[in-house]
Image 1: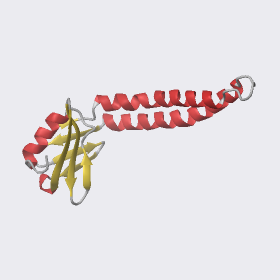
Image 2 (image 1 turned 180 degrees about the vertical axis):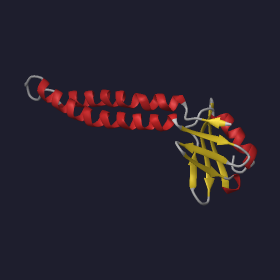
Image 3 (image 1 turned 45 degrees about the vertical axis):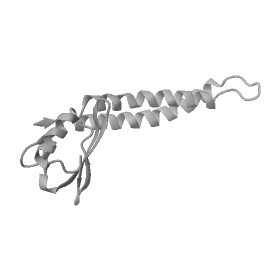
Image 4 (image 1 turned 120 degrees about the horizontal axis):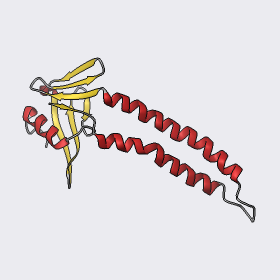
Length: 148
């Protein structure tokens, strides 16, 4: 069965540049406050806000766009052979016998974090995919109740 990167994660990453703009605006406002009976300096505010916002929010937005493009072409497939990852024109297979442990962290509404631990590649985080509860069930079906 195929799993894609969750829409909630994409929405969270989409909000990132907006939150940075709000943070930078507050920071620029505080840095531009009048000192000892001087008037508010709109010039200072716009310079601090403009430069900082351009760098911070711009780079965050560029990162979001890059991740969004990646997410559109990325998926994983859980099968008897193993965990197959598709990234563009590349496929990689993690065979189930290589998985040493399944690490699961649960919240009130279901699984919050799902990691596969292997001795060779370390920990593989599957938390960014949609429908983690079903993904865990499928992985656990092939790996067994190793670490959960």
